[in-house]
Every structure is written in C-alpha cells, then in structure tokens.
Amino acid sequence: MSTTTEESDETAGTSGQGDMPPLADVTALKTPTTPRGARTRAALVAAARVVFERDGYLEARLTDITAEAHCSTGSFYTYFTNKEEILQAVIEGAQNDMLNPGMPRLSEEESSPEAIIRASNRAYFEAYRRNAKLMMILEQVAAIDPKFREVRRRRSQAFAHRNAKGIAALQEQGLVDTDLDAVLASLALSSMVSRMAYHTFCLGDEVPMDDLVETCTRLWVNALQMAPEGRDA
Image (cartoon, rainbow, N blue to C red):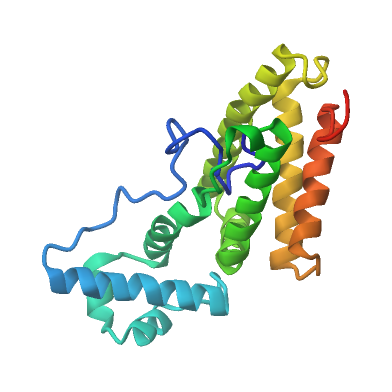
C-alpha cells in the first residue's frame, strides 16, 4: 500500500507505474542521433534543472540555461523549442527517483500493514527531500499551466484508486474500519503526507525525519482504526 499521491510511487509489492498517466510529456522531444549530441542534450537538461531550481521556472531564461551548460543558443534549439519542452526533459530525468524511490525489503515478520505504511512514508519523505527544489518547480508550473495541472490531478486520482485497493483489502480482512470510503480515505491520507512533505522540505518547517515518519504513520493507523503494533485490536 502506498501512502502518497501523484508525487510518489513507492508502493510495496508493485512495480512500475502501470496505467498511471506519465508526469512528463516527452512526445515532442527530439532524440540525439550521435554520442556527442546525447552529451550536449544531457548537459542542457542538467543545466536547466540547476537554473530552474536556482531562479524558479518563471524567472529562468534560455540564455541562463545555455550559459550554465556552456552551449550555444543554437545547440539549445537543436533539441528543444522552448522552456516548456526542456522542463519536460528535466521531469523525465528526475521522475524515476521522485516517483519510484524504492523502500527497504521487509521480512515476512516485519511486513505488517503498519510496517509497510511506515516504510512507504519514509521512502517518500527521503525522495521528496532529495528533490525538494524540483517539487517546488512542479507546484509553480501547476499553478500556471492548466494542462500540467490536469495531468497532476489525473495522477492523483489514479494513485488514490490504486491505493484504495490496499485499504479495501484490509477492510475485507477486518483489519480496518469497514465503514470508510476506501477511495476518499486514500486521497485524504495521501494528501496529508504529501502536504507535510511540502511544508517540511519546501517551505522550511523544521521537523525531524523520524518524527515526521512516525506521526504520519500513526495518523494513517488511527484514521483507518487499525490496531497499532504491539496492541490488540
């Protein structure tokens, strides 16, 4: 069961993103045909991430990106049409870490529902912390780009419905509150985790990692009326 919305896909027991809508739209991007071209394009994408994270998406200029990459403006237009396209390349390059940060393997004895939620929370928070500056860029772009905002909304809904299957399975086993709407519960709890990450790692609220993980895990457990570890239901 995952514990987050569209920013993360660290679900235990799943692989890949399946039918999740892709976050990056790379359909219009050009592919280099030579090793040198691949190096130039990679340098531009790496430079774009530096500039976006340093200056913000709105303030970033193409000339700043080419200067950071030590490339000419002509080289930029060989691979990208505008700032929007190179942002998609930046997202494509980072999304594996953002969306599939992974989590430690749990032994059978350690794989209780609460332990899986805790491990998922920790993996998500650690990946978010690594990519916090880029996460802020995604928030900025979603506020001004209706198409990108709709992609994020559809991903959130897809994650909520997938995660709801995990809650429904626990309901069938009598381990959590059977009266809860599994989809709404999934969306509410996942949104809580992602907003806590945003406030902690983007806005600068100072919360120790262990406290963040344990508090959000306990709120998941309490909200679902799951028996905490070490106690009877």
